[in-house]
Image 1: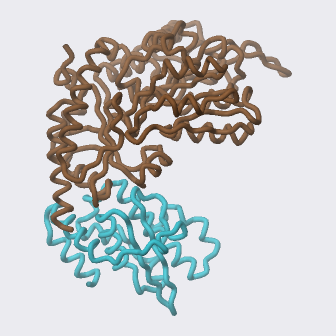
Image 2: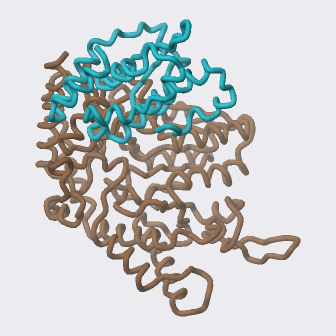
Image 3: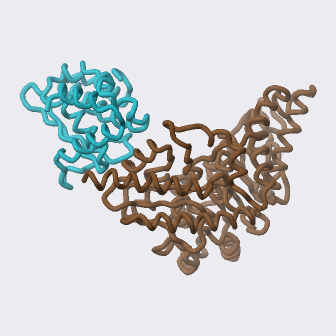
Length: 408
Length: 148
């Protein structure tokens, strides 16, 4: 049975005091805290196993290479990739999406083609395609969610057309929490010959990724959100597509043969990992992914579903509070607004109570604006979030609210 | 209210709750902009909430109006305006705003993000001061952190 109270103990930072108060970390959607196993793994990699990879035939380099490639294998297992060769280590999910846009996108998009996005995309998956559209003459088409943030199949399917070449959607909205029916989306897109890129940054924290079941063409997620290090992301691509794609960046480690006149490039994944990669970050990420895989995702989902209900109920007890995003199928993020109080003012008081929430537009400015706000507050859950955290958060929120309403 | 009085009042309040309540009180006294004033031209970037500062150049002194959609920020604006209004451009450039916030005991209570927002306002005010001095070659430095 999954118990967040036990899990909590694996995350040393949660025990530190914030302004003399208990650390109530409600911003996992922005970045997750780190388990001790990750820190130990990073330390070991630097202290005992460090050298550059894919280079020397000396012992440490071979060990580092083995660990780095094992990390690729672990990442493949985490998302049920058919092969570790489909796994490209990037700097971030943002870089993963940029890589696809700059290689597959520029090579395959032409004037008149359409790129289909939801209106709830993170800037990483919106701005990137906007710029790719500008370069290629392709057009961006958006489909709407319904007023509660539910994915509405008819909106999606009627926006999909024979001109659609790429569908780029999140698997879980970082603002609304909406879970997208990724498998159905891929099937419909493939029926008309379009490719699908999934932004799985939020989804990866809460639900089991299965790229073979999804049948997505590309999928990106970041390391730091899945309890891993910063500076590392994972891009999955179907191998047949990767093989046809031109390189993203040029340099060492991505070549097959170089002469002064010309260069031939290595096969994927090496082709897309120019230069010395984030070796230790990749190894660290594998420790975090293994940490996550020791849990049964069904248990996590079950626990989180309860916690979502609990949080929703208590948030709605606060008068004047509105939750943005109440989709039936949603993950553990709660964007909200309280009548007459600016989110940043709320966050200010919450911070003094040891509660960390995010405010602003969450890198989804068009969506937040279209909901009628310039800024929202957001609380999000991680595997270490307990009911007691929610209780403390709600008490602090009520206090913050009173702070302003008594004054105004 | 003079800045001397503000420093005295704030330093007298010894916990963050009271300091914040006083900031809110100051924020509540600050006149609101109408929509025609809340335009991109006057918006300060680098703040987590929306902030607008409008400069007025009259005779040899400068003055400013400001507004925000967040109340604590409005309180901070009220202090910033109190510090900088009706000063000459040179006086404005010579003011060390961090020192004043330090004396108020506010510095430690303003989060780094909030501080960078406050500093963005001060940057803009100093930019207008330099503009009025005609130091055209200084314009490009406006987003820098000089004097801060």
